[in-house]
Image 1: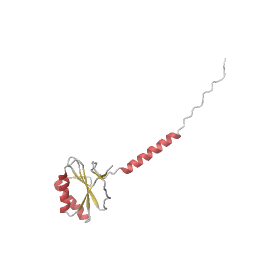
Image 2: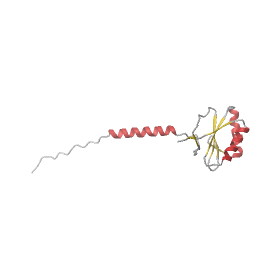
Image 3: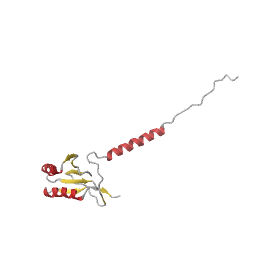
Image 4: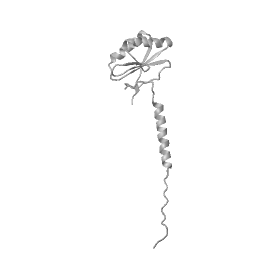
Length: 132
């Protein structure tokens, strides 16, 4: 008869690899949150190979695929668009409008907004995504 106590092997859990994984996940989410811009309406922009940086005194005007107009994330009907942009122009005479137009809308909608900018003598820039 064996009366000695049986010795169980000592079990260890190494968590150093888990620390590395948590560090990389934290780093990923920090970088991903820095890229997100909450001031822009989500659109699919046309692509361009010659992109330029935007000027300092700007406002964003967006046209969605269902022809909804936004000025600085505020929905504005088309007939009130000229008055809204003119109110921004009074605050900044050297204003530049950055137009974010969905790539599926008709060019006539972009041209009509260009006419408003020309009437108010405001620079208008069409926003694009870099070509891959």
